[in-house]
Image (tube, rainbow, N blue to C red; front, side):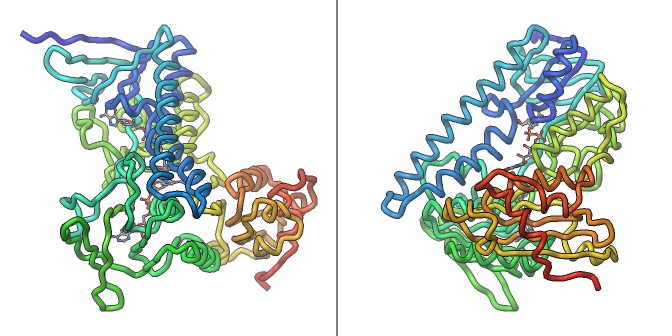
Length: 464
Ligand SMILES: Cc1cc2nc3c(=O)[nH]c(=O)nc-3n(C[C@H](O)[C@H](O)[C@H](O)COP(=O)(O)OP(=O)(O)OC[C@H]3O[C@@H](n4cnc5c(N)ncnc54)[C@H](O)[C@@H]3O)c2cc1C
Ligand SMILES: NC(=O)c1ccc[n+]([C@@H]2O[C@H](COP(=O)([O-])OP(=O)(O)OC[C@H]3O[C@@H](n4cnc5c(N)ncnc54)[C@H](O)[C@@H]3O)[C@@H](O)[C@H]2O)c1
């Protein structure tokens, strides 16, 4: 006979992502009994600190520190060890901070719904069921493997998680997909010394960004020695001995590139497959995300979905903001919603990083806005000697300003420190600080923010 342990809680959180853990802490502090179920002991804290943002940005840092005289394999192995030390410390911290609370429990195992209030974790004598009044689903996303013959079964196929955890630097890396993940990995692994090829199906990189900005991105990556092939249709992956051949078509020609590792970076899908959502009565969208309203309630009003799993933008700070919305429903006034999000910035951590916010020039023109566009190459920005002091003068800054109101509509900052500057610009956009105010403000020196003192004056185009 098998026995099942049954736990009753006020709140059940499925998945240890950013939104779920933030909500779990706040709800515990508010006196709720919280149980959080995480499927892997290697994932306390979720994707970001274990296999996402944190390790990859540490690898950006390490890869940029590599000197020509360093042995590539040795340097890479040392870097991976450094990343492991940090991620295991963060993982332990995440577990202890939550499980150490009197009214919070972390259970390690895969959760599967058995009814709208209950999940089962594990099987046989180890089985546990958790029942709660309120349920938060925060299971994140998982990589998609495109249907390319030979890819799924190739031993050379790696996920981003595999790549950052293996000690050996692949000599030849082929990345399928030139989005955020693909370009970050291309840049990191190139700087570590790998030969890198990016195969992107679209006609150019970063189709969402203005063409002039995407061109500077392409020039920098190619200047670093990355082969970039756009308009490429990958048709086959063929294993041959110790390596593999990636076959693609471009302009009617069949071409190929050899690789030791192939990274599909063609997007990530919401992780719902194992949840048995039918038993919970929780609906999904045609794209497989959990359907939510602007307060992140699912088709069951006591069940919320936070983070990548609800199909919103896949960024850690969006998952965090999802927690704010859910907490406002459960503990606050219930007013906060996804509709409140204005000027949400994003950063692609190539070197230097590309940070963007708001409208591109193309989007502003499509909307018929009366705009002024200012733009300057980083190397020419006299007010920003910081670029020269850290010997990274590549890139460009571009602003789109409403000619009638002087409000900033958007920015694309491809520059050292862009991931920081963009937050100031985004805050200005949210609070109607004008371009003139940004241009004439006092900033520390030498800093990258000082670029704002100059670039707004470098008008290259206007609507008239
Ligand atoms: C390589 C990489 C780099 C990235 N870099 C950045 C970056 O620089 N900046 C940024 O903002 N974003 C970045 N992202 C995106 C960011 O990591 C995600 O948007 C974010 O982590 C999503 O968080 P989440 O709260 O949705 O869930 P996650 O953090 O993904 O957590 C979900 C958790 O649920 C668990 N789980 C899944 N199913 C079950 C189940 N059935 N039962 C129990 N547990 C389950 C998983 O094991 C996981 O721990 C990156 C992503 C990747 C892959
Ligand atoms: N710095 C960050 O914030 C960061 C870093 C990494 C990942 N992420 C998140 O992770 C998510 C996943 O990233 P991603 O780069 O995998 O997805 P993505 O959707 O950003 O990019 C996918 C790219 O692959 C291309 N593509 C699709 N199918 C293809 C095919 N068959 N052959 C060749 N190219 C193909 C697309 O045109 C696109 O350029 C993103 O949504 C992003 O938000 C964020």
